[in-house]
Image (tube, rainbow over all chains, first blue to last red; front, side, top):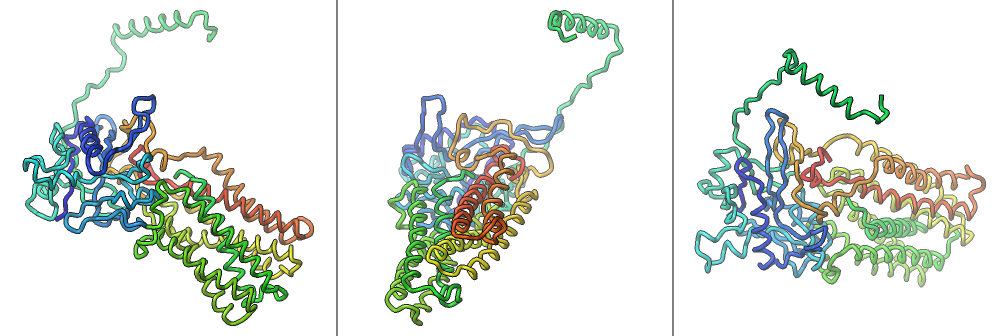
Length: 241
Length: 310
């Protein structure tokens, strides 16, 4: 089994609900509490497993806002695990989830240095490294109804931009989505073979734009003249001329 | 990368200690000095071990949870940090036996065998330290064979000069050691200058490959956090470019140029004071170099925070 997430960059609206749901579940879960520093002060900060950033891709008029939520990619070749000197970081054989055993971590930060995706954050209050667990304390919980046995971020996403499943099963929802919508990995050249995949935005026609006409009409000439007078009036007494 | 003083002090000081002990091991075998007595070798060896120990103690200040530091001996098979920790601990019995053999039996064959083992371990530890950094694919300024070469040469360099100062203080002939020091100085300077040019060439992941949009421009609109995070503090360290260039000149000047001029007698006689100044200058220069090694390293996570390339 190879569990992971598919994130649809076409439908994600960047609302941060997944990050909030993640923080809420995991701060009271097995890896919690997730420390907050100065939570009600001027510079609130803290440990998050999931962070959302907004980008602009391409130039006007073809530009598009892309919201990119990022958490642990549960890489197939996870360097964070191989660099760990204490054995606190490990990748589960049975489902490929990368976890940190917090009773073993010595807080040397080397795994965070090895991670290209910024998935690991040091909890400065407890001195141990924390990261996305793919809600391992939810997805196997038989006391939960079956439809709730998925990560908190996937459960909460209001636009259904997040999918959870088994990438080893070619007919699973996640495998099908990756196949049909050209799902891809972020920063593949680092060579960690991330399991999580992203679905690119769908192609849409460019929004029509109106060309601005340049001068020529008497109305605009009057407008320009009036603007010149107004500017001159505003500049009076400034000694710039 | 954030230049943590505990790690800089550790790599420079322990590196100098291992470099010193590596060279001291060959004092009898390689004939660096013919007049040296076993007592003098023992005393100089203890100075080397003090440097190593001071560095190793400093390295634990970098840990957020040092009570689990003993566990770092357990992942010897995959982790360079674990290998470094294991060898650093094994180094103590080997070097102490060597010093005891020096002190009690003098220049015997058993001493020579332990000297070779200790020298090999000192070299391996310097390489392990370097590989912690060189193995990280996320930092292209570190992921290069220049890193281990640089770490070994810059361990040997202050080690050789501190040893030369001790030779001079004991009235021993440091001529051969200084000849070797000049070779190390020139090689280390060449490697470092090649490195400075090499990291200036654009390479590695960009914001486009980081996000998978390789056929259009990508720019950050909003980073998603209101104040500093672990990642901005750890990886977002930025220094003014002009300051960096100056620090490069300062590090090359202090670590290589001034010591070469002092020990070759370009600035008057190469007496004890000149040697002492050369050793202090080299240590300070390597310290600045190590600070730059961290400050100039740009982690790929900065691409997600809006950097166009690393």
